[in-house]
Image 1: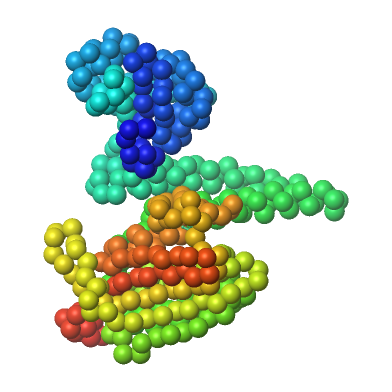
Image 2: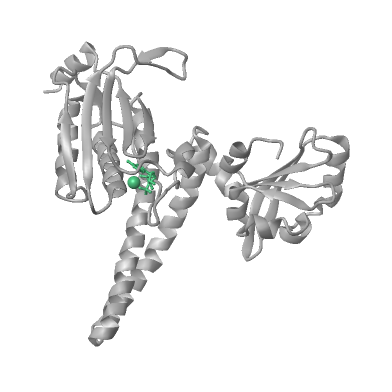
Length: 362
Ligand SMILES: Nc1ncnc2c1ncn2[C@@H]1O[C@H](COP(=O)(O)OP(=O)(O)O)[C@@H](O)[C@H]1O
Ligand SMILES: [Mg+2]
């Protein structure tokens, strides 16, 4: 295809590529989700056959194609196969240099308001999360009903059947946990920043890993004791390290492995902020494991929500890491080959002023 495949697949807005005869040529993942159809099904027909549109768009469509102009239509109901129509705004734009192909963009109106409310920043992640959050909320209630009913049922059952109700309860709990992660992601509050000793946070994370998900792992501490405090939210930073330790432990599997927690100071690291100013982020925390390394197919989108390389993964762990670290004015990178995966987090240091104002609150 002549345009950027990455852009196409990460575009959070449902988008279709339409040929001059109105045949659907391609559908991005957002469109597949929105229309509840696969690209394969969608591209096997014309726009009007595969998408239900309650407006006489055909004429407008061919006009836009002829004039090579962009067409905007608001408040029309669009639905897909097995998908009830919802109110949408659409844009139809000619794809330059494509001999009459058009891009058909669908913005569900509910999503539009949500994104606007959220301020437009990181709209991609936010819209996906917004959808998931709504869903999470909707699914939790009936699920509680199902679990409760299974538990009631189990009271009068023989052992063989009990296994089945136990399964229902256990699997429902797993779904609830997953949904809670989605909600947690959506509800993340801004960090309450104070001077924080990063080694204390790392210790807390390591200890809780050792008694739980990281029981099979060996931990090596490689700390620079002279490291000054960072300015951050200790609980949120704890969450960051827990997520990284958890991923490293999960990657290692049952046989275990070694996780190295390393801190150092690198004054040369600077970060260009949105306002153009460079800020220094000299505190370096590295979480290094000797596991199999990142699955290559997700490496490029690792920090995006819902990108997971595990069967039961949510793909929210690293998205949360990235969100928290960016709200702390830091950055996170990863470097992975089989046998060595290193997540590097760079954080700013607390200024003298931060330290003083912290003292005054006691
Ligand atoms: N240390 C690591 N070693 C190997 N793969 C990793 C590591 N950390 C993350 N990954 C990969 O990145 C994916 C995304 O991680 P994450 O965002 O935490 O979501 P989840 O753990 O729910 O899958 C994981 O599923 C895994 O495939
Ligand atoms: Mg994870």
